[in-house]
View 1 (cartoon, rainbow, N blue to C red):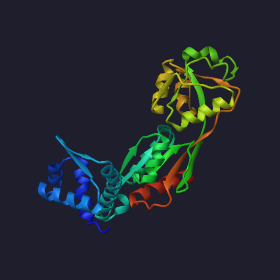
View 2: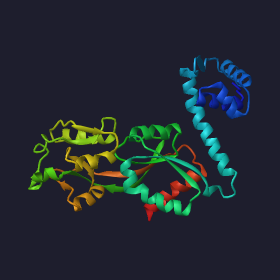
View 3: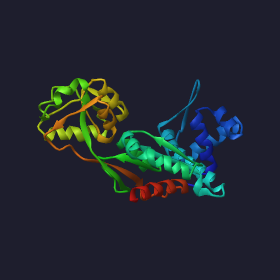
View 4: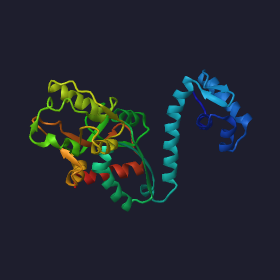
Length: 298
């Protein structure tokens, strides 16, 4: 099958705007020409890509599938074009990365600050999803790489570079100060409300398995989508939760939180850089990736 690549460009704009007229304006073309090209593309692919509706068009299942690939390819081509058009392409361009909140606060923020001082013209787009979603987006090509926290299952086509190890500790608001008088078992605090990341997260599975290993089937009383929401809820005495020690320390020092002492070891975690070892990176993405790796090594 030898489809004219220009057809895919026109398809991208039609699918993006879901309107033939708007797509034609963006392309500097006209509605009849765009409609003609879309009919040719459907004919060559032997499938319907669009359905006409009162307010525009809707992608069919085949259209959605095609757009998921064309959108990634088109974005990569624009980024490459932008880099090549400049004299010093290593110092410009756009990098799209995935990051979890914990990885952002423990490592990425400081690294970004130093990177932008050295490469101010490189734009960074940070996408926040759950760890499983981020891994899917790396494999699909939507992200250049990611900085995420363990645990996660690593597909064979991905590579990992450990950034740092970190510990999490159980903390509560000052209302739970009475629990700090001695060492506790998990059974001692089973009846108290617990706060944690939702069931779609790898963190939920980690602590679910941790409690089961201690003979306890624990369910969360308050589920949050992002770890940034945990500390404010805990500080306001809505429950107990496991948070990175480094992030909890300022609130512990201000006596806005209390730390609970458990008689069992809490699972260790780490921050890691994850990338697709089978796919090349743009010059900007490779520059940022190597910058982060060098920061780890130093």
